[in-house]
Amino acid sequence: MKDSTPDRQNVDQQLAVLRSQMPDVYKSIQAEAAARGRVVYEWVRRALRGEPDLFYAFERGYVMGTPFSDPTVMGEIAACMVAFGRCSVCIFARPGTEAAHGAD
Image (cartoon, rainbow, N blue to C red):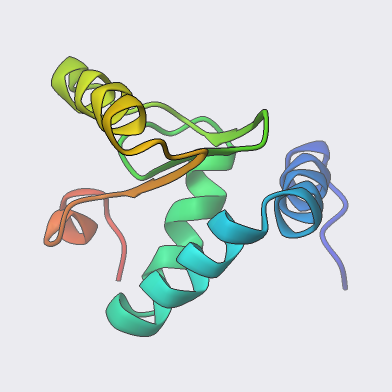
């Protein structure tokens, strides 16, 4: 049976936008999951529900996930975007944080 709760529907809608409008970010998610495991997909879903420090991305004017709570992370990302001319960014939790956030 499909979960039809508003929260689940909202996340599914955001994922559909991410897949269709943010192709570079979507490829980054797939690559990260290939390297670190399926926990990456859980991080994305949790971040789309509003949990910080797991996943944050933007591409072509779309923003998905939740910003990181460490203020230096967001400043460093902005500086790198300017320095390297990036138009998409995809940030994931640091290695080892999966246990801190209760993931498998």
